[in-house]
Length: 289
Image (cartoon, rainbow, N blue to C red):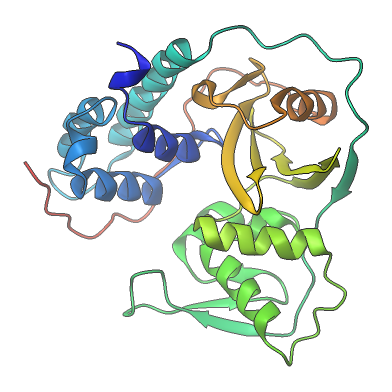
């Protein structure tokens, strides 16, 4: 099987899911809905392989911990196969002539404001996103982001991202002290429809007219949101143990970013475990054949 037989839209979605080394029920729901609505993805690799597992998992519209582990193993196997297809060479040797990097550590400002946010594509529910302590009443925040330190970018669920964006667009809000890089990150996450990965350290890197956002912490996966030209950004994952990019897909100036992560991350592996986070079961999904 070569790259021509791979559906890269599916690969990009899986890459986003695996960027922090965790598999959560909301991400499983998003993957199932994507495949359910995309016949082309269902009939090509890796969607064709995943679809059989998704149908089994959602047969009773309940996702058990055992099923989460099963799906996590399938995704891990797919990542390994895809990395072998797409990686043409080992990680490059360190570049002693790399340009200096300007590093800015990012944190969230405290704002006396609570924003009530509807989940995207859902006008029935409403979540309270508190910008003073960066908390939210949604399941994702309560299960995934709540234990991050106060002010950490990693506390941002999708609703807090939208709330921060709304606050910045409010002419009455005092946002003059916001770092430009922080503002840009909020709008990038909103545009990509992503929460912040629940990682402790978030940084903005600049070098030779290029820039990227990186995040790392107590996970073997770092996340990277890199500028790919103009004002376009894409999301990548980097494995700090194996020194490799998820699915072999690298951002521009990948070597510079990788060296920074390897030199500054304090991650120490604690053993081979499958990290899954089962939460509340999703609503019923009528699966296509």
